[in-house]
Length: 556
Image (tube, rainbow, N blue to C red; front, side):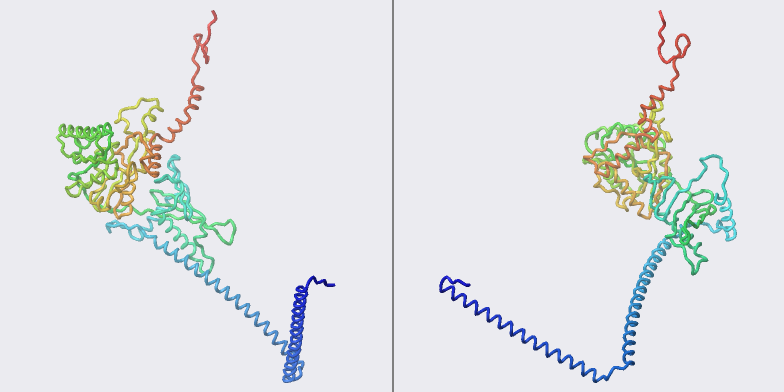
């Protein structure tokens, strides 16, 4: 029952009813049309199927078999296509693998191309051995080497230990520069090991055509050592892929040839002047001590020297002038030059200025330090180990330890400076990380553009110059020299002046310069040593002749 409240509501109601009836009529019409269309399409489809079946005629058993065979052929075609696709994928994979192997082979050939024998020039032909003599000599070297049998030695110090190595690492027995206990093979060591690898692979793969061939990946590890009388000995271990825990071991030797004459010439050093360049700032007492040694060695004995002092700042400058003037008057020696720079101390800049202010042509330079003492023999080695355009000399200086530690541990008084100049493991060490003391000609120094003048403070400039020569074609003579000493002095590693790298280098040098490892250990365990000494001290005898560990009391 519908209740209408007024006339307007009644009108709205009839409008809604009319709209609903119209929508219902439209939906009914659409459904009727859809049924008619579906019926017609269905009839036409049936008619088309009948026409096709009548045109082809009635289906016989052979026709059914043929259709079955066609379906089977389609299945076989799909299988063939699938197999073909799989083969294409496999071919592509093999091609990629071949490409990778070719790249590895090219890289390996590049490595083998780097292996070249070191050329020896100016060898007289009459000193060379013939083929038969050379073969006999090599056989003699192999038979005398400790390879197939042991050799009776006198003591344990004659044993030559091996160094372990892999393809990318060497674990050296003799620690070189930097004291690395493990390092990458570089330079001559890399060329040496690469040549050994190539030779080992050639030997193992010689008779393995068509079979499995050894590769670098099969190498496990090896050892080598250098016998000065026979040659370098190698033992290499390769893994057998087809057998577990089975190794192929090769023992090789690079035999040394007989001693050959390479060069024979005489050198005259009488007229080779050495310009000693000394940068300085303050430290007047050290400079006075340096000049006392310079008078004895350079002026009284050698006299083929020139001293250039480059002084930084004004404080102490008058003292330096007075010292040089007095020595010049006393010795009648005029080969002095004093240059002044009102700037912050920079060793590299001081040496650079000293080199540039020389105006008498090319000259041999010795870049020195105020804490260094040298002998006349060192000055001669400075002349013999340098040649303009060919050689520069970088001596390895013997650096003395802190004398207050060295001699106090021995219970001795500190001797005078001359008596401290002893080469032993308790008095100092070879400063193989220092490159400040160097002899080179002025022309070579200017050719490599000298020092980096922007380096301020301690350290860094000498390493940069050394690297320039190493990367140049000049021969760098690096050798221990017993004629030059670095005196111990207290180092101040100020972080406000030095960079981070400079401060680390300064602290490292400071730690190494104090004392030997054993001496620092004695200082660290001093208290334990005192306790052990107290235990080993024999007890003092008492007045009655009885040995007691305390003072006896006599009864009254």
